[in-house]
Length: 282
Image 1 (cartoon, rainbow, N blue to C red):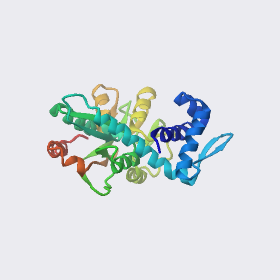
Image 2 (cartoon, one colour):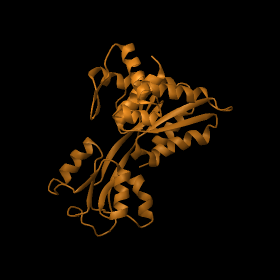
Image 3 (cartoon, one colour):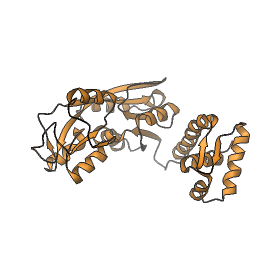
Image 4 (cartoon, rainbow, N blue to C red):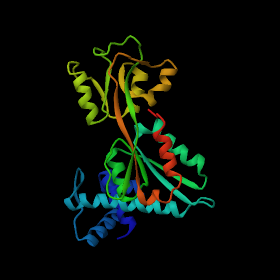
């Protein structure tokens, strides 16, 4: 099994067709077909069903997709680590949920690069499921996530919880009757708490599952939304956003999870975690 065949398989899945995959990889469609056939012959399984509308994964293809992403990701990481410039001794590969980059994510990153010039740092953004999978597969060494689940040889370090506060572009915005209210999905626990507080408020016309997108919409079009305090604070200071002080405030857990095999080689890791744990980044 060669890496090119795996990369071609992923390109077909991501693009949805052999034609678009050939355009993305800048090779002929016959080459794409040949690479896919080589991979399927080696596995003894059909991975994709080809239709006029595109391709669909077979059950074997669905299983193979996960391993293909892991193997190609590990190869990229191996190339990165073995190609470190002179003076760099090791690399920390850091996965971070987008909503956690402002504050704790950036603080972890700065703590590594500012105090340890011998370290290279590779940063990747991902969802909770993606981060957990990357950590388990070894694609990343440490993740900052809202999840608290560890798998195998991993250790979770709780950080100060993140506060979710109701903000608006107008200080006199009503808390429960704002037609411009934007619902931001901050996870299952938040949905439950929000539903209890606003059970009689109806369904918001606009919703986002990313705080940054909701913030951008709020700044451009106005309205109100629950946002992480760290993300919104600069706009409060500039007068673009206002805290609706009478509204309920919610919190989300933040967890730094590390592969123990990596942390054993990092003398700096425990002091940095202690610093982050004692600092209110929310």
